[in-house]
Image (tube, protein in one colour):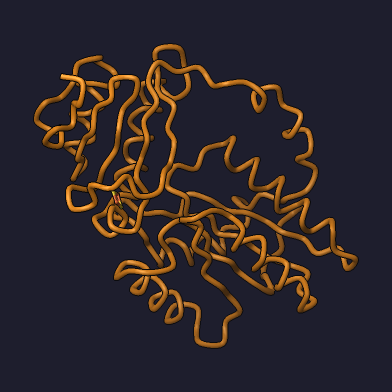
Length: 249
Ligand code: FES
């Protein structure tokens, strides 16, 4: 199904979009770029997706039939997108007036939330994915088994780590692991997003298990050190550890 050239409603969806300086700046820029009267909403998924489902149901209740979801999830991948499309399509099919939903992803810029890129993605119809006929995804056997991995990395997307720039760093981490074919492979890494892990003032925080290492990662160079040293190399990187971040030593 071809994507339409215009949408009645655009939803910008991602963790950390509900509060904080970055979220406020993003919202203000979106309003400026789209114009005050543009029909859009910004939905925070930091605490889960119930808010998105509720927003979409309310949108459909207004009689809207054509919706674009701009996905700003920093750890988004194919499986996540297929799941999201499946869920959105399911919600649309519940409606008597047969609304249609499309999703577009990866609008998060190198430095984090990028309102210009997010708005530009609205016009890139060839990258919009329809939320129909993805039901085969739900039966995919990959959904019913634990993904291959040697280490599980828990990425904090709590509000204070997000304000300290966690989201673009987690995206960079994912990219670097993908380049090395270390995402969900034997010997590789399973990335899992979390809420606050508690040492907020030392963030952005991530933890690596089963090694029980607590790391603070502040920029792209430190992401690379972590990947090369620990996630690919198998060695703890002491310079990135939070004080006491190796509880079993
Ligand atoms: S918000 Fe990340 S540790 Fe609290």
